[in-house]
Image 1 (cartoon, rainbow, N blue to C red):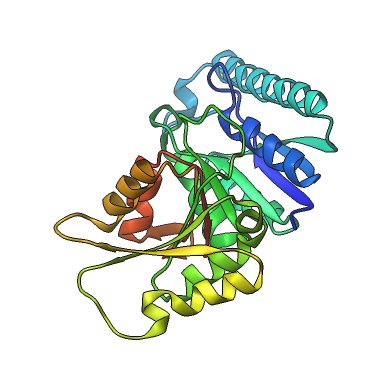
Image 2: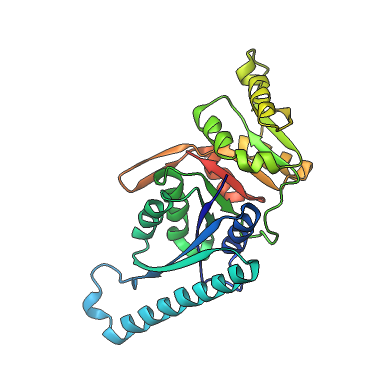
Length: 276
């Protein structure tokens, strides 16, 4: 059960799609939610500090402060309307440091929520997603920027390949799966292989013991990339939530995503819960 949710709140755009979705998750589970807004340090290109007037640096800092405070105000209005327990924090950070800081904070929560990286967010959005996935040790829900509805669990796709991260993701997602009206265990394969672990029989039996009646769906990969197969199935089946392992690794501050994970994060059309 999710009792503590943390979300990165953003002041960009007319609405904060990640904060709205996270609020709906907290309302569904009766959870406490924390909204984290980053007050970013002004960006000063290397070697140009002496060439930038101090008043321009201060102007950028004031603008960043305004964005952070507006994000908090909007978030607080949303959680008040939802009638849930909430807190907010504004933290100073660099664009690179925010990812590490958010991941450290997320370790003290049951679930972290961030928005899909957007082009106008530059590398900071991508770093935040990757940092939360690899460094928090907690499940992460990534919300697509096209998301308009709150949490719905009419049909959930649980991606399964028999691997460690897929098993971790399904285990972490159990509160979602237990509330879902329909669950599909989706396996993408180039050819039929033997063994219960690969064909999903054992996983479906495991979910059944938790009261989750899951259907095993085996899909031929064909000439498509695995992420395209999954996204196509999600669209065709009317899925509104996806669960999958987040593949990749990090070393120092360099994050390296697996191909399928990167593909899903770049083209996602439904919220995706990932675990690493």
